[in-house]
Length: 256
Figure 1 (spheres, rainbow, N blue to C red):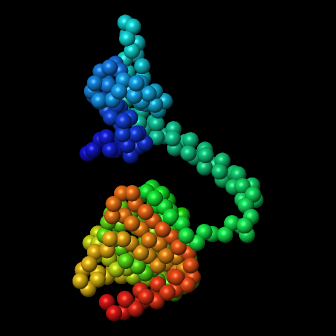
Figure 2: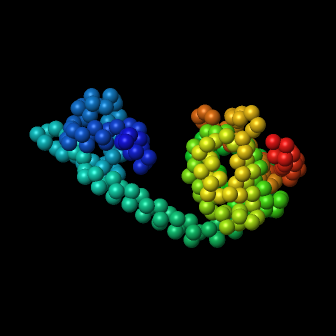
Figure 3: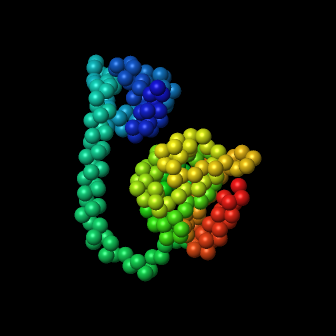
């Protein structure tokens, strides 16, 4: 297990994770020792120590005029996350409370949905996928009940959790109302095909792998570039473009 990476996944920066691990391994150490062990500047060590103390992950011990930093129990990591969850729950409650008043500030007629949008980075794209999934689903049902497109093999690996989420969420409707017809050579993507028969994943006749992803979902056209960092996504909402591309994919599907 890559422990440093796991610590980063829990919210620590790369430098914080490195310093936290060094303190845990040493049991007790001064700033100079930690700077030497981690390769971080002494000033950086002091700055990061303050951050770790705020999270309750270490404490300070003074002995004979010297300052030492002492690691807290590993369970302090769990306590840190529980505090974060409580703070998040409190913020969610406040947002829910003010939403009705906040909504009154907006005048929908003055805020038309943008026709073209772009997103950069995996986190932004994942949020975009979750935010738009309902609109895409409703649009596909209005426009014949098909999700057309082709996919870069790297896409499923990067956003696997969202794929499983979306398929599970709309499974009751997809069996009768929605079919997924995607040109894809992604072996792991076929996990979903086995679980959801309405998803037809078809390679091209020559087995060509795509270097980008295009989805046509009703009036929405989505392009995603996930071959290299940073990832990019683009969404176009246009009835005519969506209709034309649906026709093209229908013809390609019949002849492939």
